[in-house]
Image 1 (spheres, one colour):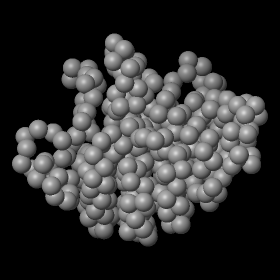
Image 2 (tube, one colour; image 1 turned 90 degrees about the horizontal axis):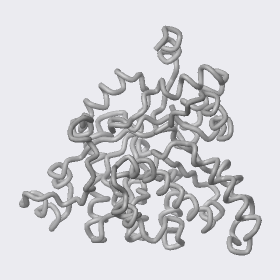
Image 3 (cartoon, helix red, strand yellow; image 1 turned 135 degrees about the horizontal axis):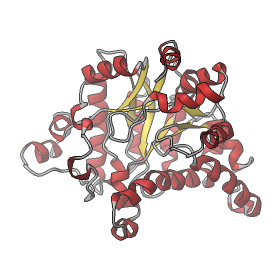
Length: 357
């Protein structure tokens, strides 16, 4: 990093919209209701299903994720990466759990842990977990924790969810979110590819293929469902955030859905505007994983297409494929004005999450 770039980073306020804390099963067990607490503490076998893929490449990729577990780790991350405002989440994707009782119990346990371990005694910002297996029960959970000032959004996994997240059965969740002025944060998970695309998961021969497709496919499916079912039209004061699928898929989806909308408007009667207009008005996109074009001007055009009022910075730390701030900032400093740069790194996430910082 050049001295000029380092100085610019040091002088810039930064909001990181996606920082993950690991919660070991034995830790979350202390917050779970019975019988699930004992299912973890009394059994040597993991309760949470996981991928069969070798994501660590036989140990070639370090697993920092398993050691990033407490408030002191977040403080060290802030200092090392010069991140003033990390927005943390602590959750196993809940959509993959076939047992509704377990999913709802985990939702409450994760939120209690978030409040107890990271928010009550610290000035962190966090996302509350939402399980969609029972939407009315999820709405009750939003009512329970939604007025906490440090909870700035609601985390919905986009892997394993059924029905798709735009389905009207989920309206109680969106209504409660809008009532509490909390954005919906959609987050994919590559490990859960087996739940969303089982035939592809069995057909691919390496994790390169799964990792290339899993997150964007999940987010594209979610965006199509949310727009197609008219969720932003029904909840016009609700913001939607998409994390961990990069940014290149968003222009494609906006423009493709515009075309389908013009040909099949009768199928989406709730939409009074084009899909792109709803996305530009209510949707926000996290930058990670940014992608690495061979020509830097290609990234410039993608960022310009999204606009500084939609794009937000995210590290996805401490996952093995996380982005350092410099990966986005090298484009911002080279191609964009300081006003646009500050909007992406601070002002747009402040608007999306309603931050008073």
